[in-house]
Image (cartoon, rainbow, N blue to C red; front, side):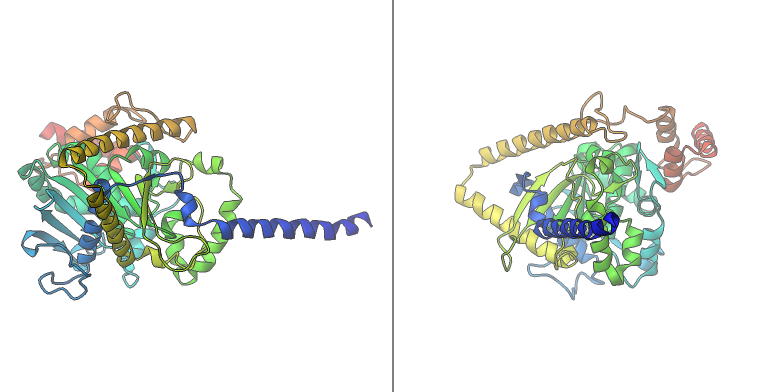
Amino acid sequence: MSIICGVPLLECVYCLACARWAWKRCLHTAGHDSETWGIATAEEFEPVPRLCCYILAVYEEDLRHPLFEPPGGYGINPDWLILRKTYENTQGHAPPYILYLDHDHADIVLAIRGLNLAKESDYQVLLDNKLGKKKFDGGYVHNGLLKAAGWVLEAECDILKELVEKHPNYTLTFAGHSLGSGVAAMLALVVVRHHDKLGNIDRRRIRCYAIAPARCMSLNLAVRYADVINSVVLQDDFLPRTATPLEDIFKSVFCLPCLLCMRCMRDTCIPEEKMLRDPRRLYAPGRLYHIVERKPFRLGRFPPVVRTAVPVDGRFEHIVLSCNATSDHAIIWIEREARRAMDLMLEKDRIMEIPAKQRMERQETLAREHSEEHKAALQRAVTLSVPHAYLPPRYGTFDEHEDGDNSHKSTGESSVGSSGKSKTKVSWNELIECLFEKDESGLMLLKESHRDD
């Protein structure tokens, strides 16, 4: 009898708990994710709207006669376009991309388009992964995206090396949106690890901008490469917040709201400490830039504000229940709001009338602050016991630390000839497989190739 009387009480407690959860989730807005972050400056955010236009240009068949040009144009000189690869050229191994030599900004840009819902090959890239399937540099990455990056490097290694050596003062920038953002992030990782294959390019010359980024690398890698990779998120974008594997997201693309709601309920019940200590859990890569343009319980869009940080905990861990969760993922909206935010920053600087000398000093101060913030993030990752997180012996270089035997790295880096003159040619994909899966037969192949050279 007492058990029967207790059932209504349990139901009341359960209903109150559900009501409390729903109330907290409905009150959680995207602005809460970055409310403690700093405000981005015009100098650091300047490349974002420009690179968004370059990514949009990948969708055009003929840049001399564009069909979908945004207001203000793409900002591309067709004569400086080095190459353009379509789905026919990539044969489904990677999304389409362009290689552009930007003389105006002293930049070599490889821009990659986002997911094409009508292309089966893009789904194959996403589906080629399982949790904890691919190890890389002491962490985990998305297997399909890493393979796509390896294919791009194998195809364009020679021309990238030639451009890097011909223009020693130019930066090398990888930019992508959605699916392309994951490929761009993987490109940055591999090039930083094997900079000697591109003429010993300095780490400081390599940049990556992941627009509407996919969660493609484990937390220790996301923080460690924050000085190279930058992720840009517009307000409520669902993809950087969804820890659901990418392959599950796009399997359920026609019932995405249902999937997001169920995942939101599940993630609420998982302690953040448990999330941080899962080495296989993937995150949005690098330094984060969050464009905030809407406020809770307000209608319409407000002047956008850009916040930035290198967070360790609270790294877009909760889905925002918003009707804009999918529209904020569109590259067109991101480019538009990034342009508005940039114009507001420049207008503020113009009103303040900052002298040129003071502007240069501010850039130096900004670089120093970013370096200190990156170091603090690495320290916090170690403090929170993030798996495989460490502080390097000399800040600024990560080449001295290896999870296993250092001979894996030294053997791999000295054995693969970028000129292709060795008797046994080893591709970028084979190099990735050998170095980070510890394939003994592959290592023997690399050693034999090195002896032949």
